[in-house]
Length: 220
Image (cartoon, rainbow, N blue to C red):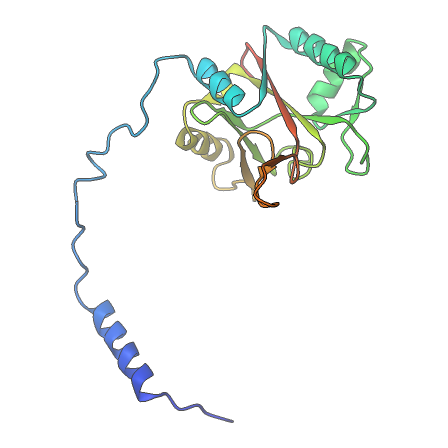
């Protein structure tokens, strides 16, 4: 078997690294920094729903407040008719049943093969108020595809899914799933956008060009 000799310079460097790692650890420069950090981001005093709506709209999202689930169905129906869509998909069985029970025949089950679909409706894990972000995961129906594959993404959520910040959303997921967290957790903040192409901002290249959020004034 062929063996390789270690150069003197390389061995000297490795020897210094071993010596450094074997010594006493350096003290933390500012030991009280984390304890005294306090709140990093200033709070406005608004309700989480209001904070989310404001941040989400600033990102170019379309926010719609719904008094109840019937209001959700009516608003989506109006959007469908106003846009003149031909195919609206839905990844949530519960919402599909609601449309069917109310005899609103505008949605069909989500299918990646429906490449010409105008939009797709999904639920979400949570809404992050401070950043106006939508937390999605692979545990949702078609969680890896439905929210990014179609030109328009429609999200519906309930009031108790709106959480103040990202750490609260992660804690919510840990409480919900325990030690079996989803293999994919996605924090979607606004529509897809990139400036990689000739340094020009382009929307909708790597995902939906438009994002709607319908917030239902009720708990899930």
